[in-house]
Image 1 (cartoon, rainbow, N blue to C red):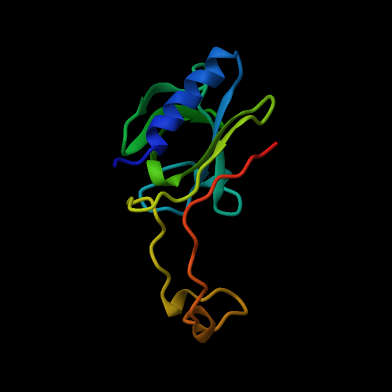
Image 2 (image 1 turned 60 degrees about the vertical axis):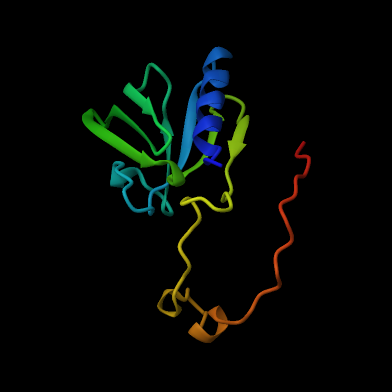
Length: 142
């Protein structure tokens, strides 16, 4: 099946705008192909207002989101591969959806190599086997 993320982003964008709220995207700015204003990236993430008053020429394709916007008065073309979108939510009340990785899609993160061991981790710690994952599950979030 095709990934559900683009469909959910489009539906939630419509829902947020229809309720007179301001849609925002939380984006992983470290993903390949992401074009965003680097000066506003914090901890590898950026939050972008994609409301109709904030952007022009908004394109929500199955592969990517693109639009024109002004940042500190400068126009910029923004490009977000769909896998870089971590969440869509309303600024006013925080309602929306965070996205996980979809099995079988290109949106899953690439496997890390031993050279990518984080601070305090050795390559040996990265190569240890982990417990097998159980199947997908849903939980109620209140």
